Length: 171
Image 1 (cartoon, rainbow, N blue to C red):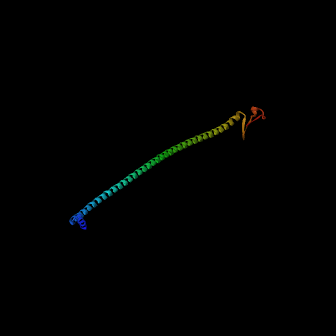
Image 2: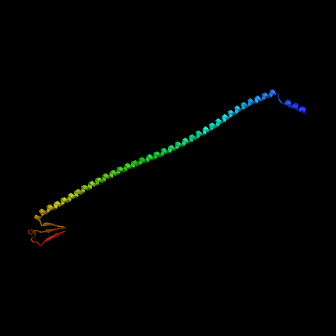
Image 3: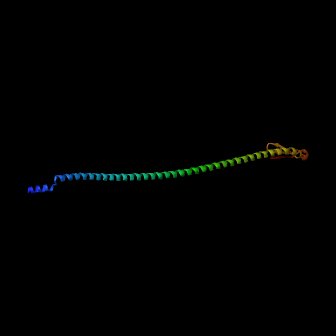
């Protein structure tokens, strides 16, 4: 039995030339498989690289959009500040105009008050001169008027009153 099994074993084994050809084919197949694996690996690496590029591109796009939004917010903030500054400048200019107008009015009022004061002073001087001028002619035609402090003493002349005892004192 051993012989038959050995014969069966030897007949099941391919001859050496055939085995060599199978080994060469296997090597060739292995080279093709290696090439295929390298190509697959390259495709896989490219896919990962493309995926990474897409991720980086997406991140850059999002970052750019965030930066654009931030720039827009800053621009809007700057515009608000500019408008506020312009309002303040207009308000300051208006306040300055009002202050100048108030100053002109105050100066005009003070000028009028000075003029009125000067007029009153002149009127008082005129009144005093008129009173001084009245004393002269009035004294010759009418009773004499004497100024003594706050008292105005009227003394009748002897020719008109006839009597020295009649004296009028006016306050």
